[in-house]
Image (cartoon, rainbow, N blue to C red; front, top):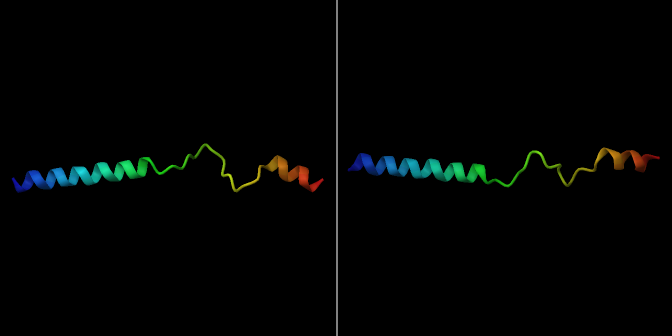
Length: 46
């Protein structure tokens, strides 16, 4: 019985961590909104 509780606890921790890591809200394909695109930087320098 104790082993079963340990396994269920371990699985719930693993699933919770996976959920937190998977839903961190950062999309690598999206550009960072704080960075200016290079085209705008070139236009400003002219």
